[in-house]
Amino acid sequence: MLAVIAAIAATPASGAADDIATGFVQAMRHLDSPSRTGKAFSGTPAVGALFSTSAGKLSQHFCSASVINSPHGDLVITAAHCVSHTSGTVAFVPGYNNGTTPYGVWTVTKVYLDQAWKASQNPDDDFAILRVSQRGSSVPIEDVTGAERLITGHPYNHQLVEVIGYPDSSNRPITCENWLKEPMTDQLEFDCGAYTDGTSGGPFLAEVNPATGQGAVIGVIGGYQQGGDTPQVSYSSVLGAHAAALYKTAVAGG
Image: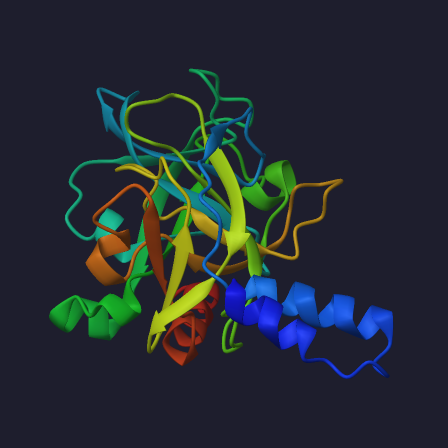
């Protein structure tokens, strides 16, 4: 903080006041983000929880996921480590909140994983795309919930994001906003408390529209330490060329 103040104090007197103010705001963004904690809220339609099932009924939610825009409207993104070793039928419940399923229950019918993840569980490829459908209906999930945009191949460190996830210990989602960091190559860091087990796969949303709650997915909780060893720090693989290729495969139905 002292370094920032000193830098501002050294600004030439001839500099415009608004330039000084802008410089201060930009400098502050690069300081360590203030301590924040995820807060429970009622949820948003395109983000939901992944559930194991038993005898055709929802069992326990174990990860988070979000609907992403696609030509057929039936794709969801989550973390690869969430779905690499699952058995039985997995269900996605968008907008899940306190036991309610306002947008229905959707069955995961196909899981797409990057080859690098399959080979060595490379933390830089900890993302998965799921195809979902609803029994007895031909209506795609995107027509019901709307969808987040998927953005790949862009540097998004120092971006303000909203991160949504479903902690295992709660039946309500949590949300928090903060600025991203890039602590290492191909990884993003999001600092906010309360992101415990179950929030893995939750989207890093940039450019969120306040009216709709929808934004652009630029990451999902996962990657380094499978998303983080402590509730205060979460990670995501950078969604680059491998993520773009996986999305293309999923769209093609391969």
